Length: 231
Image (tube, rainbow, N blue to C red; front, side, top):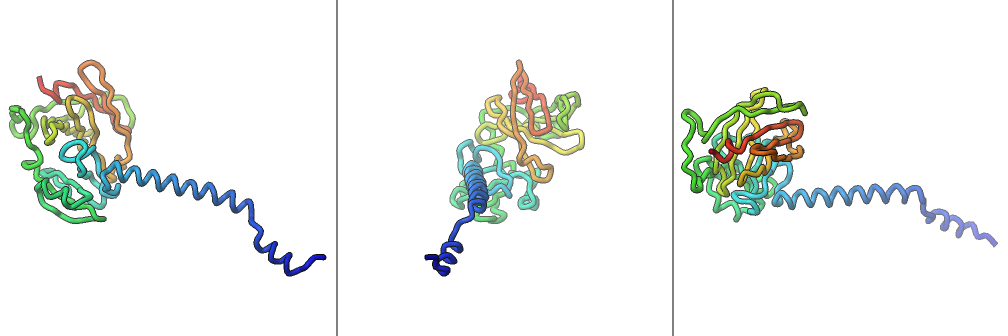
């Protein structure tokens, strides 16, 4: 005997296989996105991507703070004469000196004058007159994935970082600048910004003889060892 009431209950509780099959991929995608976001945050020392963190630590590799690049959240504090640094923990910021300019999403942001940040290490390099560079030159460069057939003015600040990092500042054909960082002659990374979409670009360095060809997104730079290390 069929009881109508029981049929209604059974029908109302039946599951829709199609709905479950769609929900599963959506759930997996959300989990993958969350896991990737957590990994990126951890890699950046707990500093969100909106602050454009870069590098492997500040002042030395492995330290908890990070250099900050250009983004809509940091543009008001960027200064050619200072280094912008973010620390996820306020206690990590105290020994760095400089001036605390704000706290954003729990991150303490400091502006550290170059005079304080640029501590020389066993370097007696003089400066090129009229500049704050130890040497200047013209590099082979290429933009928009073109071969490096153009010429870009460049200058180097050797032992620019507390850990001995050298910074090569290149003036691109459009007049904008790109900073390339080296340690012990090896390319580390480049500065990035959300303004030119470079925050997500891939950085690689390929050595050939006494020069390194750097590919940063669609940009290419050929940097000789003599510029970075002298001699």
